[in-house]
Each structure stands twice: as C-alpha cells, then as structure tokens.
Length: 69
Image 1 (cartoon, rainbow, N blue to C red):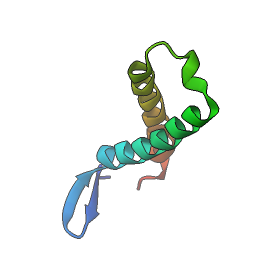
Image 2: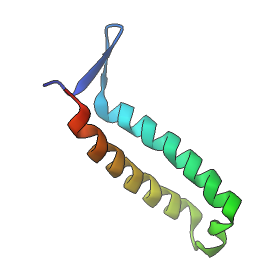
Image 3: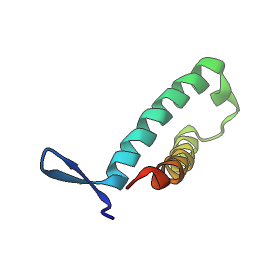
C-alpha cells in the first residue's frame, strides 16, 4: 500500500489531496454559515474557522482512508 497518488508521474501525498478536499468543503460551509448568520454567535471567527477545518479534515481522512487501496 502506498500513501501517495500518482498523477501523470507526479507523486502527491494523499494527505495533500485530503487537505484540498477539506478546504473546499470548509469554503462551502463558511459561505453557508455566513448566509445563515451563524457567525454572529462566534467570538473569534478565524479560530472557529481553523477548528472547523481541523474537524472537517479529520472527517475526510476517516472517510477516505478505507477507500484508498
């Protein structure tokens, strides 16, 4: 089992791919939270966004880990 993705001869760590997926999910979640007005209840938005990214990254890795060959 390798922990790298081979894209046209360029090896990319699978964690980098998972981080990109988590970033895209967090961008969508951030827009949704802004639209709903949730950020009015958040004391420190950058800290909340970082924590949200870490949680989403953990979810993406735990879902994606069994799918990797």
